Length: 324
Image (cartoon, rainbow, N blue to C red; front, side):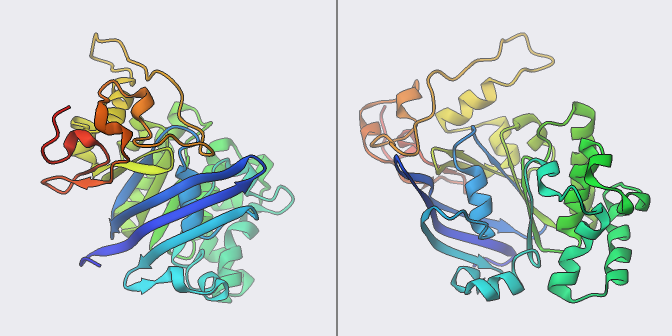
């Protein structure tokens, strides 16, 4: 593992068993994340983003058919840990997660403070009084008054509930926080407030983030790197500035061209067709049926190609000697 890397994921796969067949939700994903870095995982709904986040933290449903690959945290291969050791040393201790839909992540009949303090009771063995005092500190960090510790989830607004769930993830001071659509279903001003909190936490605490989202505009505020997913695979992996200014993969170009611009007369474009079913993936390049640049070689499955400068792209247009 390169110096400075916090997380390394090698060939991670997560397949689900369904009545209609095997769904390849995450299919051979590999990436590295440095300390104090934020990586945004972008893509359309159903591309495997949330499955990747849950798989890394072993929050798996019962119908998992295959969960494979190697995951390293610092120098330790945490994918080799048994479930008990993973729960004790990794889950909500060094890696935490903010779930999508904060109201569903909170127990409606338990006070918010008790839920936020729970990881310290379970994983650190702290007393209730000490854990609640720490919860008040973390509430202040995410911009919530300590008075809200005694309230129930239904007494909080959507933005406050999202901050409370973020506080729950931060209370054990993890190295990495995975955020699954943290600003979905929130109004624009509340979204901006949540993103400002995340930027401050990254700056002041040095916490690393993996932000799972389909919101390109919001994600650009915090991203250091971008991993673009399509049909269970990463199709482009690049530094955020490079990706947003000059995307390479045809899917990335179309995705960014679909975003409305304030000071641009050009109308937003759209991507024709639909993403493929994860139960029945096309042979060859998975984006080829929707790609305006497809050519003969797209019938073969492209690997993730590393270009000069370190950007990685899964597209035959960038293979050595390619002449589409």
